[in-house]
Length: 224
Image (cartoon, rainbow, N blue to C red; front, side, top):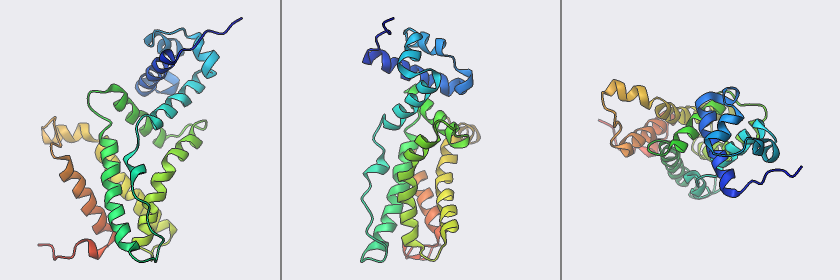
């Protein structure tokens, strides 16, 4: 029997439908037929061209990871530790990293339902990585971990690996918690548009992280 043809347009619709359904219902709750129905496609295409629901889920994750260029990937490389200007570059690099990462995760909201679904899926994967997708997830986040760790190693060469890891997790966690808690934060503030000044919030994250790291040259003036 000739397998059904999968056009590029149909493939895109299936993957986008899968992203929305997996985000809304989780892997176990989403069904192939409902995904295909929403994409106006034959459900047999999933079995033939994606090797079933697991394969479709993996392709959905790959599509999310490659959908947009990450601002973090555009950051300048750091000089080797101990080289002239390394500390200054790492200080700037850390600030640039926080701004880039915050901008990236805050962009996953608004009018595009795929963006919001992407954040839901990523959050779920970070909390409970599926065995089949764990390698793909680590491959995606490794550049973030590497860049942040390199900055921290230069700024705090006195810290051991565990302490550096904890510092990095704290910085990431600060931003991710803010993004994932926007719903309740807006209720607390009584402002559905909060934060109107995102740059101010991001600068707070930068200052908070640098003070927590104990980087004196980041704040040359005495704070009132």
